Length: 160
Image (tube, rainbow, N blue to C red; front, top):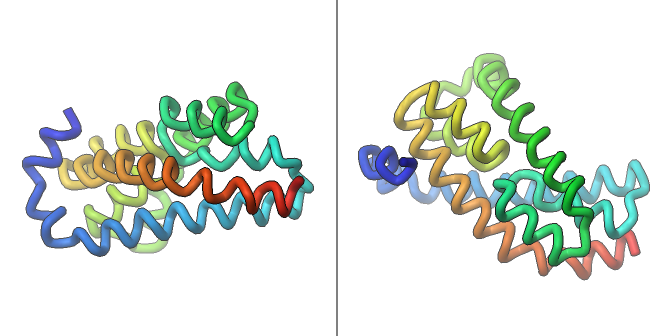
């Protein structure tokens, strides 16, 4: 269903592909940095850091990433759901507060930060937001799956 929305709005992907990819990669990197900052503040161990790394990707992918990093899978699922709900509820208010009215930016932000629940909200907001959010879920998941094993040595170094 998301692919149909993307096909109908493919012109936005062609026009803004570099901004979309930059937004997604920046989001993943910022999210990872935030996990490490909170880890230092709250003195996480390696297992807790590994549990939180996949918090901004969809549950099906997050379970595998959490397992491979040695995280607590059931807690990862809870954190993923919580992240999705918070993003879907708070996202539109953040857009209004910071005057973010571009539908591509709104879709990328919701999809890359709050996955399926954010995409549901994006679809409610409009077709372009829904299409960009659906694309962002997929690309964010792929990026996290590729980068997560690279963060494991850093996690061991800082929290191990």
